[in-house]
Length: 209
Image (cartoon, rainbow, N blue to C red):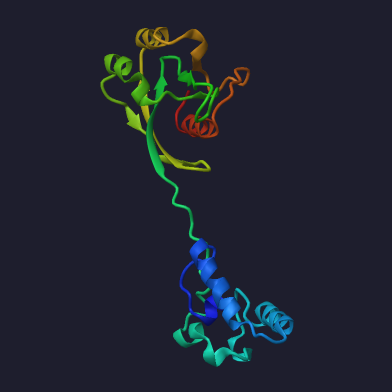
């Protein structure tokens, strides 16, 4: 209510502003019958000067309210600002062999999707991929996945390799850390990162594997 009365156009949860509001509250509190005043202010905030849809025409102090004078009653108090979540970008490689299988790589135990299976990041296999395929045969629609502390923009690039080249790629990876995955084989169950599972399902729906 104080934020409206004094037309404070900042988030009231800010530490410095909280101190200012406490000072204003003390300034307005009378020396006599402070308890009655406090109860009246609480009732006024609960019934008239509500956070949403305040009843300004019924407010006994409306004529002195700066928010009412400035036409800001619907905008105040200011809501908590949304946290600015950083955006990271990554290119994932969707590598398909002659059998229609997709090359997957196991993520490190710690970090994003720790211990789960994922499409390899292009940067991590850039040298091997450059020897096997000069350009992707297709680039799929970019998808956005949100974590608690950042957003990840994923650009999937599709590469088609023949059997010989596919075996070469598999050979450079540790056997326990990579696999050729058949999307349409239910018996082959792997722990897939959620956006990777969604991406593979979407890809399977668009091509014949």
